[in-house]
Image (tube, rainbow, N blue to C red; front, side):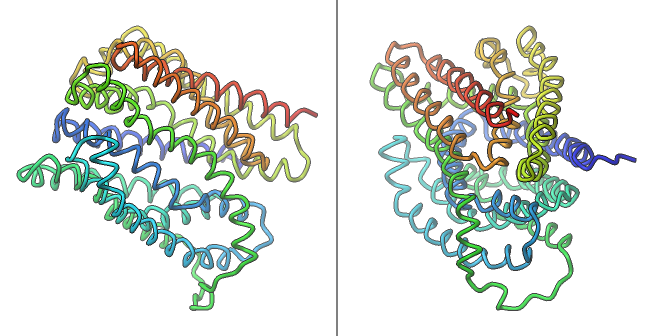
Length: 430
């Protein structure tokens, strides 16, 4: 029997994360084969906008709920339910914003009319994603990892089935409708996730008074969530600007739209997903780490917090190093097995060594947030994102194709990881 709750939570998340990541990989494989390189390229162009609005939509409240629940001393029912009206109203506002600005994003910024409806579809998914994330935040705070694991895998299963059966039907009409369908699938999959999570919630009576706005709860939750959102928002803004900068600069120096879409799809559809495969371990560890570090740091146990962080980094590297060696020396094997392609081999060989630093970035970020140092993480992310965007713009002017993006990604990983590493150990110093 595993007595250490942190280790137990980590093991559950690792097992569940492995299954979820495996399913996500299968989904990506099936998706890439169903919609082809063109469709995958279009979807990859949409994803940065999707990520930006997901970050905006939850206001950092899932993390705030997790932190407040883990600290104890509050009415958890009131804490969660009183935030629901606020988040739903804000999500409706974002829906309207997306519908209004989608023509500008697709036609002016990304210069591709096929992206209009996929971008508009993003708005419909936001309330489902946000509510699901808040419920997950509650269970993380309670250190109950089974509900998260089951809901996440249930969500992935539904997504896989819809990709298999729905997307081929939509492709009969057009690749644009198929990509729009890929976005809208999130409504059903996240809805299933919400239902599963609700089945695990404590059986308590709920009245309309529980949903009444509470300014004290809201203020406390936003004081935690907004700095965290600011940090993630900076990263997602950088990702949002990425295809816009690439499209603008590469068109300016003479590349064709088809080349940009295809190569961007290769990097974001094949290369980065493959390199990110080991990261589910570090994210699972980070999620389990947050309530433990938060509790230890709040009670002045810096040594315990540092020990847990060191364990998290060690496990992340233990898994990341052998997988990185495969990516560096024989990338054609995982590419062929997973995607049945050899596209992106040269990109992988160059960027894989630097992803070792990325694998330890998640535990470092979680630790800063758990210690109430979200602003520090935000500044590191901000500077790293600015650095990435500037390098992307400048290097791309030299007609090096997508290598400007590769160099920019590496620069961001190195700077952000070293920044977080320095400040985490500075704050944990006895």
